[in-house]
Image 1 (tube, rainbow, N blue to C red):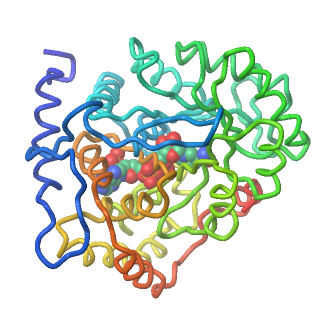
Image 2 (cartoon, helix red, strand yellow):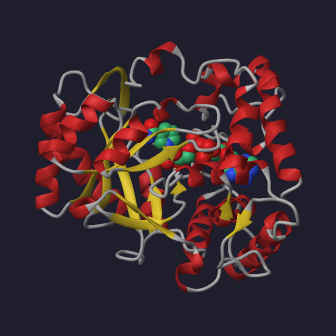
Amino acid sequence: MEKSGMSRRDFIKSAALVGAMLGVSPVVGGCAAKLAGGESSSGRHTGENGGLPHRTLGTGSAALEVSALGFGCMGLNHHRSRHPDKNMAIRLVHEAIDRGVTLFDTAESYGPYINEELVGEALKGYAGKVSVSSKFGHKYVNGKRVMSEEDSSPANIRKVCEESLRRLGVETLAIFYQHRADPNTPIEVVAETVKELIREGKVRHFGLCEVNADTIRRAHAIQPVTAIQSEYHLMHRAVEKSILPLCGELGIGFVPYSPLNRGFLGGSLNEYTVFDAANDNRQTLPRFTPEAMRANLRIVEVLHAFGRTRGITAAQIALAWLLNKKPWIVPIPGTTKPAHLAENLYAADIRFTPAEMKELEDAVAAIPIVGSRYNAEQEAKVQN
Ligand SMILES: NC(=O)c1ccc[n+]([C@@H]2O[C@H](COP(=O)([O-])OP(=O)(O)OC[C@H]3O[C@@H](n4cnc5c(N)ncnc54)[C@H](OP(=O)(O)O)[C@@H]3O)[C@@H](O)[C@H]2O)c1
């Protein structure tokens, strides 16, 4: 028996049971939503790699094959309020690997540092079997974030790379993303620096977060980009205008972050939710005030209604909607719970018809969204 009072085998068994209760009944008559193969009657994917389907981010030399859904590791110990202890978090990462997840996303700034350390410990022994992505670009002085500035200078990119490799305990980062654009460093210089790191074998692929189409084109011309990681979900669709079409044109993959709108689309947040003042950035976001959440719950209700006749949950609908948008989209939901992990991965098997996609989009679009996604300071750092 381990420290938390639950053995690894018990943990996995209970996760499978809860997962089975949550989302396994095949879709019933009359509904167009369809499940694709690889699902056992226990709700667990079967076959190679846990049976989770794979997708490819990027093309040519920039191509990276990963599971259709990755795992956003941030909330395991950063910015998502109280969290399980380290041993439970590590067991959850192992459960994700057992279920076929091959992409794990973290960043220097999560903590800072402690998230990479946790992920490094969890992924010990899995080198070459899973891919880990991390990010550079925020400015730190003595471990303290300088909010007014970003730092994508070549020296800082190299420093973050070395430190991330050490904390993660790997020889190469599968994707190294610029976290936010740095107005003081031209994107060509950033791309050139990452290109050198790729040549040196320290990084396999290049990614960018929250950048505009012009930045993507300029970066891609120097070092082919594997993935754009930006916010995308049913309550924030800005990337559909120019970013997704450009990704399609250039053969770049897309990784939606916060695919459940930071948990809101999963349906377990409401006006009474109290965020941990010391560890949750949602309390700084206009869309997460009690008033905004009360109003926006109408959107979650649309998902509940849509799922009721299809045997699927709000979180599964939100993730399946993204997966059905493009075959090169790989969402990275975060969770601290085995039950949510099982529920979320099930989305990889849900197919919506174009009519269902439209029905869902129309129903959500009919509801005005209250509160912007970022406050003014955060908004100033994104290019979309
Ligand atoms: N590039 C960037 O700038 C950027 C920014 C933000 C995030 N990210 C990345 O994106 C990842 C995910 O983002 P995120 O954590 O902000 O948002 P998210 O994945 O949309 O939401 C995570 C929240 O959803 C809850 N949740 C998960 N599955 C659920 C389910 N089935 N039902 C109900 N609630 C559920 C989780 O709570 P439980 O623990 O209770 O399940 C957690 O608090 C991060 O880990 C990070 O890697 C990147």
